[in-house]
Image (cartoon, rainbow, N blue to C red; front, side, top):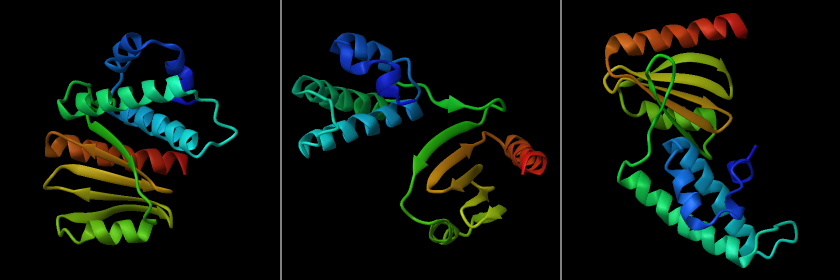
Length: 164
């Protein structure tokens, strides 16, 4: 479900919307920005399926600015998994091979797990990061030490061994 619908952002006043936003994590806030930007885009294109009003668009523009400043000033909490590893969610327009080639230019990155042509993992033992690419979605996991990184790699490998 979309966050705009889930939290009924368009029906809130700005103060209540900002209060709700402060309880989101960075990944959820970025997702909300993308949803509001999409509404603004289709409103400007005068798309008949877009139900947003001029008042909604004004609210969305204000909230996008607010969210970006919250992210810049590190006001919002980060997402962590059960192992305590920080999770960052993004997307890319590159295909899996092109993204992998770009990542592997930095010699600290190496292939970790290849599942198929559109789902792959890479690991960087210097920055303690694991990147997962799946159909354009990127999930970066950042550990705080090498033991945590190794545990996360083991868990990923074990999960795919049991579920693929």
